[in-house]
Length: 222
Image (cartoon, rainbow, N blue to C red; front, side, top):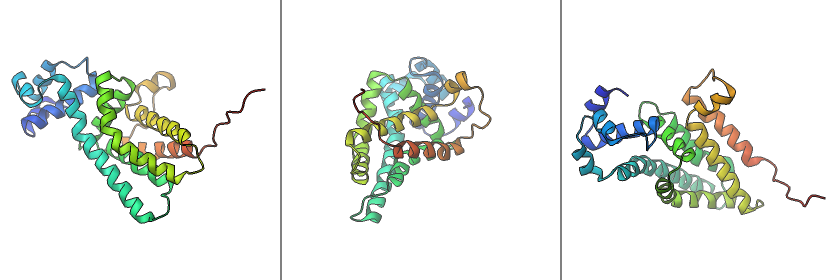
């Protein structure tokens, strides 16, 4: 992001959100000052206070504007799959694609800001703050409820608690992957290919493999 680009496009409110999104992704919530946001956005503090009231409310609105769209697309796709399936359960792979694939396609949108937002979202999962965690739980509640219900119907032979665990693991894998490869590179070294457009194919294969893996054996050790 360049200052000229941040200052030259969009209304004041959108410009503040765009700048805050990038800075929060790069520097974290605590590391990003309101002064930095106003400087990059070309506005004064009064403008931020007028539109958002506080830094905490600004953070919430950064998430709200894109999560609302993301979850709407997810639920729309799920309803389409349910209509196509009729009385039959939806294939688990299609449910996983509707939820996780939708997010990964947003993460590949470099020009439209989806890539930046999804990296911010991934970073937030790995560096959670209490008020952000509570806010995200509320934003996700309805969407996740519908997708879990679809998975329960699609996998009646699998214990619901096991489905919850696997969904949890899939969320973690996606979040870590979209947050960026910096942490992984500390252990594995530099990746030759970090093209965000290829992340979907790589991660979806991994997620579906995990969902289809044999169930754990919790038999009592002898």
